[in-house]
Structures are given as C-alpha cells and as structure tokens.
Image 1 (cartoon, one colour):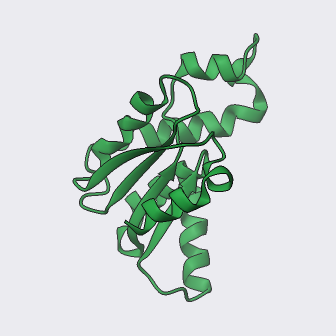
Image 2: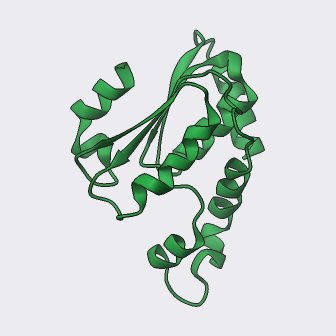
Length: 149
C-alpha cells in the first residue's frame, strides 16, 4: 500500500497534473484512494468511495469460501492493503470531503460495514444508490451526481 500511494503520487507529479483533485476509488481501488489521501492530503480535494467494504473476515469468508479463503496467495496483498487502511486513525483525512457511496443491491450488512469509513473525515457522508457492486457501470448518473455534490 505504501508503494501504491507513492507510485500514484509520483505519477501525478510526473504527469504534472493540477492538484488538488477528487479521488474516486471503487471496490479495492478505494483503499488506494484513502491511503493516498491520508499521505498526500495537499493533492486531494475530496474522496469518493464506490462500494468499498472494510475488512470483515466473516464477509470475506462468504466471498472467498474454502480452506484457504483470504489466505489464498491471490488475496494476500488485498488483505494487507485493507488492514493498513482500516488502521488509519480517526480523522486521518482531517476535513477532506469523504463520500461513501454504497450499492443498495449488495450484502445486507454493506451499509453498516461501509459506514466505518465515515470516521476518517470531519466532512463525511454516506449515500446508498440503486445498483450492485459495479455501481459506476450500473448507475453512472447517480454516481456522477454524488461525486459532484
């Protein structure tokens, strides 16, 4: 996660992109958006998370059942990334606007699970939109409207 945030910062600088900008992270990309924002706050005007669950071993076991579950090598980086982001302290983003956008057609626990991120900013709000985990494809107008807010 440290490498991903540093690489993203270096890419932004190398491309000479104007900052600050709004980070939009969907699913696992939300961890990078949050971690980068916590490390490089001057680059970020806001963060929008699209159906980004926090680390929940019980939910993970449902998604990846079996003996290896989250221990599967394909998932080790993802687990480590989630745990690093979950350990961010309250108000890690200070007053950077944070919008948690939850898919209505996800697991019943999704809204409560994703509300976890609200503690990271003094300017945080959660919205639930119609659609499944691929919200950006299933409800692009709703997603864009929330980001613009």
